[in-house]
Image (cartoon, rainbow, N blue to C red; front, side):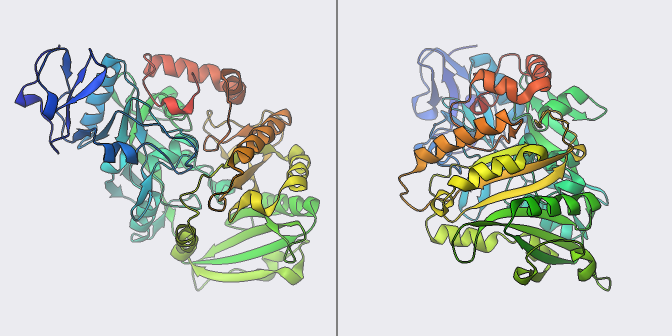
Length: 495
């Protein structure tokens, strides 16, 4: 219906809260200019819909600071039903809508995507922080709102002697955001991605239904929502797996000057499973003469039991003179990036553009790819960032929309250039161009991208090739659950 807005149409909140959408002017109408006709009233909400410049400004950029797009309104939902109502409203008015994870620590809260993936230009951004309740912590799982961060869940679980089995290195990310793209960390070789540990979701589909989905209830929706980039619905609640938490972490750093030896040892400890956590990096040599490689291997334990260091190191061919060993409490270990985050913010790096690249490579081609990278990689290309390189098993990843190389390789590698450029670095566009070139090389070798990266120029054909055999599954799920195409345009899959 259209017409003059009455006081009943006003939302809770500030005087700038939105009361309707003008079909004549294609703009939101606030309480200050609510008179007149041609306005479709916003449904009564438990939260607020806001259009102040300050609010819109907070949602106009993301962690990558490479793309700036401003929504026309921000929904701060007071309930899940607010999201149901506004998805239906958006569909009826031809508006786009997307959840924005609003991740981060302290006052630095923003979408943690790096290339506008959560952006909704001219549409409605949903503030995930408004849904941040931990509903239950049980023996084997936790039920949480999508806006809960893994940091908050980890602390709540640790109070009960539990932990999420799969954690990203940086924990101040929303549960809904990471499981929508995958969520990878150093225990992927044992537990899979974070989306692999999800047992059930509640989701508002693009056609405005609040549904429950799991591997046995609406499995098509479940598999399209997890690692599907937010294309079929807005996850509002998730049941995620928990396991008993260890007390301590023995952290062993192994260094290699030879890439082939590094890869062989990485795959050796991957296959025998001797460590609880396994990751790795391309790092600078101590004399700054070039690059070498580091395995970061961690053994979790709870006293009085303790890991046998000699057994953990047996048969490995690292540069033993460079061996580094340290011990942490388990919580200190999983929150280990907190001091680094503080350093980045103090030095002005956190707010800089960050052209991240994240790829998945088949083991049979990883040496060829990395040799190409290190031949041209300079310290300035990373700034104070880092390059990640470690293996995992194809068999541990169960969600079909997390695209994996189509080769026969059972061992795959995560490769990241997590760049934190120096302030005012003039080479940002060159880094983005390098990302595209390296992505094309990876694709030629059978590799795939991880959705969080910054790769310019992605075309419809690029995305069809990326999803490969799962493309039709994604298209069919989109038609079924978001037929009007209102959800999460920033991913660009269908543009």
